[in-house]
Length: 358
Image 1 (cartoon, rainbow, N blue to C red):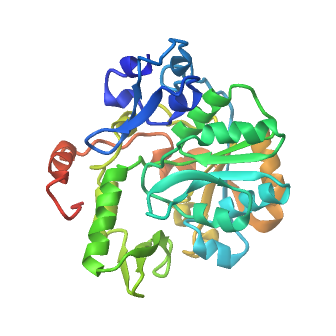
Image 2 (cartoon, rainbow, N blue to C red):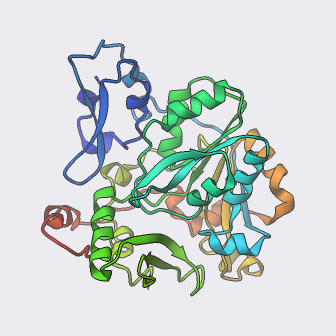
């Protein structure tokens, strides 16, 4: 079964596909000592149907041969753009799906500020999905939920990391014309355990519970964004990306999932309809579009992706760009990050430390 096929931690990216597809519900996703999820099979209930093997994106990789179009763009609504991590393109896509009575699956915070996948049929719920969350999200049973909506004929937009979109595609199986997928240019996903430990630390320091978190607050600009915690006693914590210890740990690659260092989904040829990311380096390529309020780099990967873009283009400022030139400054699209040599030491000491050291 699936847990016996995972010989090393790098062989599983925690997509939850196997847990979603199991007809016996005998696969649970359990966190290891680092806080990452891996499948655990209850063999007393297992009927050896092998569906968990068939759905695994690592075992059954999909070959993609599309030729994406690269664009620099941003939302013309400056208020939405400022609230967004980069150029505010996701909000336009999501709003377009909702306007056709569709449903959007995305990554947000729950009431305890754990990072989870969930769905919404209104913009108020989608607001929780806006903005980057630098933590591996818990997919849960959202693949199952998405398939139910698809069978009802609803338009479904599912967003996630490239490996999560691959897991969804393997689970869904059939090509639903009403399924739209959006992945991101992913650096790698930090441990939920590390995030939750850091959250407790920040609340302990402030002596107040958290009421809001933003990983990408832009008051000092898009390129020098800040991490901001707002607390119940009306105090706040705000540090730039280079000052905040959680973000330093993330960018120094000490707290990422093992599979991220050998990611199988680094490619310009992607399974999603559209890929979204920050257009780092835009000042060198299209300086006329750089006002430091946020710009998105998007790859339009499929005919469906081009259709999505046409439906929102009136709300965008955009310009086509040479994809190889864009990737020069956004290597995370095609290349895994290197493992920090201190990673094991970091996790060995994690349970004994109150502060996350980057």
